[in-house]
Length: 463
Image (cartoon, rainbow, N blue to C red):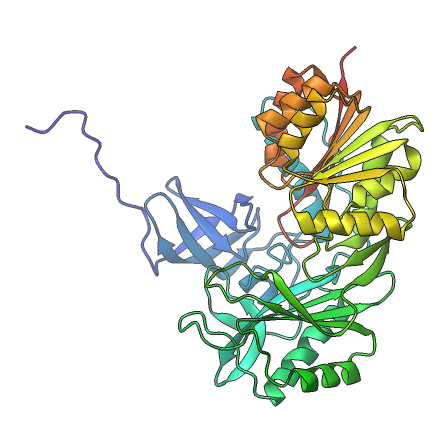
């Protein structure tokens, strides 16, 4: 006999290829519109809150489905008409159909909701944006694939591995787009084969280009499956002829069957091993594998904001945790007595030391180590910083790290977050260590046209 309380499986109220009329009520973190049919959520490409549309159901799963707009019946006043839908179909710029002021307001609301969900009563101020929120990226890593018998570069259709060839990427610096386009044309002319992941054969996996915005110096990196790059000298000669600001051509070898873009081995085919940029008055050497923020305009605002909120004194000792190539540490070094930086990536620490020497900064101490472990060591060694800066990866801080902060007891901690969800979580841990959130949370639009948002918060030790 069947149990009386057995759950009866409910069928989804829609099916694939069904056309339904729906109102769009929200946006997801992926920039998809949200519609509900009898409580069943559908995530809709190119749909904005407040719109009404006929939508075509493209996929139905157990608890949700996907759809695309077939006919727009009522349009949002915040909609931007895009001549080229590529930004949306590839996911390069999933908010490109939303007016920029509305993007900034949406990001402010996202941060507000995350702190509200964490049951923290904070003020979130308006998002710091850009005057020109397009063509800002100083770096591109563009996949190469064989399409109709020749190498093409572009981006994958959202949710697939189907390459869409393109010349323009909307959010990249025009010089970066040009470098990728010129490199692709040369590889086509010389009939160099792209890598095929199914057969694990071919040569070129990705074309990477980086520009130093302050100096105009340009680097092109060819990421290859093979150790040998056919006709390398000819490729270099043609790149030099067509890209007058080119300073470096590098081959990066990645022979592994992996979705990781860069390998560990670099061969300088021509020019310098790093290009030089300037950020907030400090020079930085940027190599093929260097971590360097892709939006230098907003990065300058972000770091200046962090420096101001730290209320630094000339006698202060500061820690820059997750310091990368030393950008925050070197930004604040002139305003304090000593700065200690820690980063788990050895190569990043080597870059940080080089950058300190390049800028003749003598009061920084960079250590290659796991940040939580190093914080514990510093705490046990009775290092007493006045200020701690944290700019962690998306997973945020660990409980060990937060505990070490509690032991060190700095007067201020400035949290620069690329994932406000983990920042809101970590905030509670810092409150438990005797800190309070000092002032409003400041969102910063480091990645316009995308759903990502950075945020800065200041924590001060309670008296």
